[in-house]
Length: 85
Length: 253
Image (cartoon, rainbow over all chains, first blue to last red; front, side):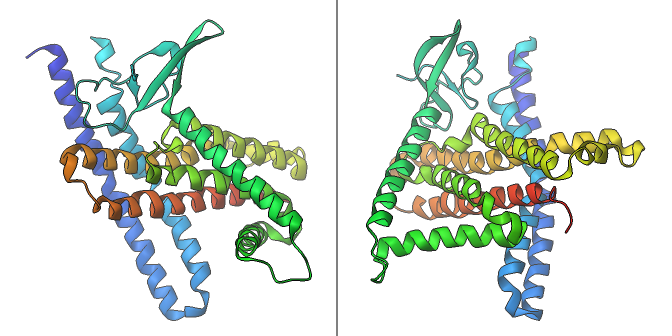
């Protein structure tokens, strides 16, 4: 196996591992959506406010997952390790 | 036609950041169209620039038509359908800024919020029209976030004077964390928009590359999710976070 091939293969594995970060935002957004649903059940009149607050919170919770995604994309398409050969 | 493919704008010295030129079926990178010299650097004119110019052209044409319709409007008669839509849009943005930034300051920011709302929304759904979304380029989203960053601190100095600086050192031990927190704001805002739009673009590119000619009609459902739904949500979130961060700096009344 060439050095380059080894780096590419390990980068692909690393990109897959980086996407494990997707678990966290999934759980967090689910919790936010669940609490949002129960809040609408308790107070249907405030549906608009609850929806916007929930979406904002979910978007902020998503950030960590997107950091993982950025790492995966950099490993796959803008690999900094190839240049170190 | 397309010489260098990269996910970031191939700005610096025509450097190739990504190499996947061998398989042309899957395309979701930024393609360079035209290379030119600028201040001694080799710079590319990329798909991002072109789709951004198309988006801006669409917005300018819409604004010119809206301006003409508004000028011709007769206050005595009921407004027509187009005028109704414009009024609805303006009122929505006004209400959004008023409820989030307070009655006193809200009106001043509805121009900026409306502008970034229209631009980001149109840029996000550009994927529907076969363009590469301009917001899937980190240069664009980071620029947008930098404008917000400047606005946050301009308003901080305007309303809190020197307290805006001294607040950073409030618990003295937490000074580095406060400074990092301030600097992380534009970074996380831009990465959030960029990551969401890019993930949609990558996914659509993979699906079109995977099934080739079988991609008829049914990817429309995926376009509905990745381009329209996700794009609208991210637009709303970007505008919302801008408003929240700016209004944090207004003095307590």
